Length: 275
Image 1: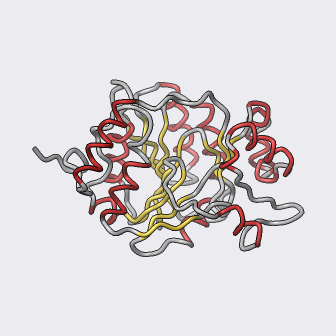
Image 2: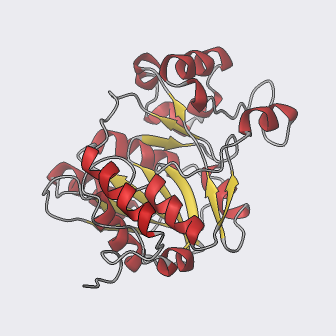
Image 3: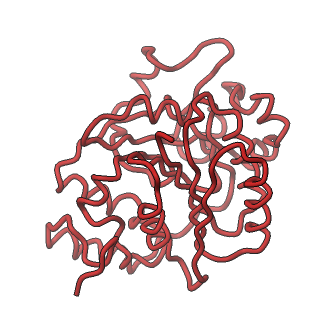
């Protein structure tokens, strides 16, 4: 195995089934899967065991008691359990394009973090994605007008696509136009060498709520540690299934302000615990 896919999940077994299907049609297949579940859902466990039995790829299922939002804690355990030196992170409501893993792995560089984005789908567009459309790779050939419509109705900054029929964005002028200043971590689509995460002691588990802790905060610390950031927008493409927006935790913002004032990239409550 050459890379580890760390997939953060919570209760969404139907979405995870679509993700497993999408991973079965990846153009790059030399990977292991680590399911980082912030809870212990029985339906999730059954689904994962069913896919393990297919033996299409190695699957590790990590769980923890559901005591509220503790994503960073299970992400740290994923880092510890990863069998490879390169980790690709994405979320359990994002369907990867067939070249998603390939683009992350082939564009990796030493001391660098690769930052991707996502196609934010509307509810109607999300409902059109199913196992058959994924196996036939129809989901990766969404009509351009539908992607534009979805992006404009969700977040115009998430205009992000890879069209296989008509024209391809990668390495074109259009890709350059839409990439611009996208060298920032989005927690659902980034990759990094394990050594860089170990250098900063992993994710800070003092963030116990959605927002900041799994992207902006760890980006800040990685930059302090000297990491470089590169955009793979419109290369490492994923499709974000619709759901209402999650409200960020205000306590996280207060703690993030304290971290920035300290200007210390090494957290005390991470991979290794310090007083």
